[in-house]
Image 1 (cartoon, helix red, strand yellow):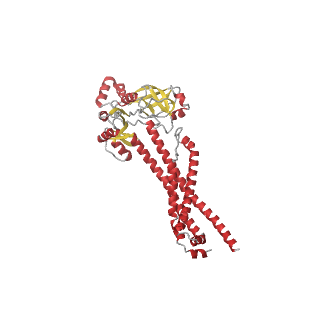
Image 2 (tube, one colour):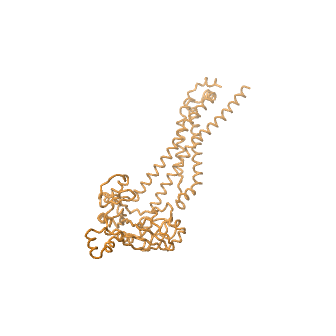
Image 3 (cartoon, rainbow, N blue to C red):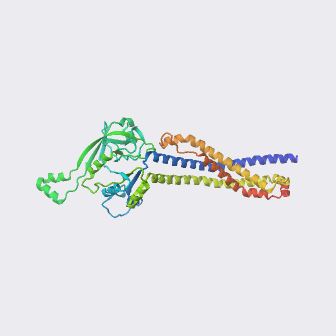
Length: 451
């Protein structure tokens, strides 16, 4: 009867031990799931960013602005010293590139072409067949960046739009209530108003003497004109369109013409927010960038842009990864607790094994192996669930974030998952070291007397 009771008690202990082991593995699985998901998201984001930069941005291009523009972006408030080359935009003081800056960029050894960024301020825009007037930003088409299209076709990378062509974003089609394809070949008209310069007192007196009040009023009248362009392409809202913007893109020649028309006679004449410098093939772009920076200008290459994106991705990944680590740290105490209880419940079994000649180190190994098994099961469950859930959700994430066909945010790398599981097993072994040490040090005689 006593032997039967011992067997029943051993069976209950075994069932309870399996239950605790499973629950501890689930606790580890929560952390493993979070860590696996963060690794997949980080890998996917890095590959995606690298892909769009390599496929959309010319590696021989350098984006140039005034160094003070970057500094003022971080300190946009407060009183600042006036400069003739500064412009206010969105509450931020922007120091513009001058024609002398553009000339100095063209003179840098290894520079092929320099494309200034022109600001075109149209009073309104009208689309063919639509009476409603709209407002929009208008900027230069950047030939160093290849945007994805919803309709029509973009010029090849490195080539500009024709002088009478324009590219509009896909969101415009939605606003106008038409399809993107319906806009291709249609025209849009830019209504430009040139603000007249303030006449001097001498000019006012001369006008009054010549033609009276009507002549004076004519001095203040603004000049306007309409420019009609044909829509060549509609840029897609897909995030693969690196130059995705809400602006109308026009050719560099047309942008220069309109910018000069609007700003002639003002302090903004031949002033530019930024410029894109194209470096000759075979010339080290870092040397050109260094020369530009030595002249007091800020310069960014495609590599710099990808570095900034990767930094943001790494920060976000680190935050999510940190939550996973916290969950794993909490599960370490669960492993210690499970192993300690297992030692207490199996004290008599441990005593029997030692009485039969099992060395201390083998007893300790037995519990360390069990701890490693708990880590393996938890890691495998967490990684497996993360993989299944991530694979199932990838199409939805791609569609929601408009990443483009064939692009996924969650990319699982087998060696990263394997390394994580091995790491969890090591952590579990370390966590089970104290319980295994206690089991190895049990006195076999006292252990056999324990029920």
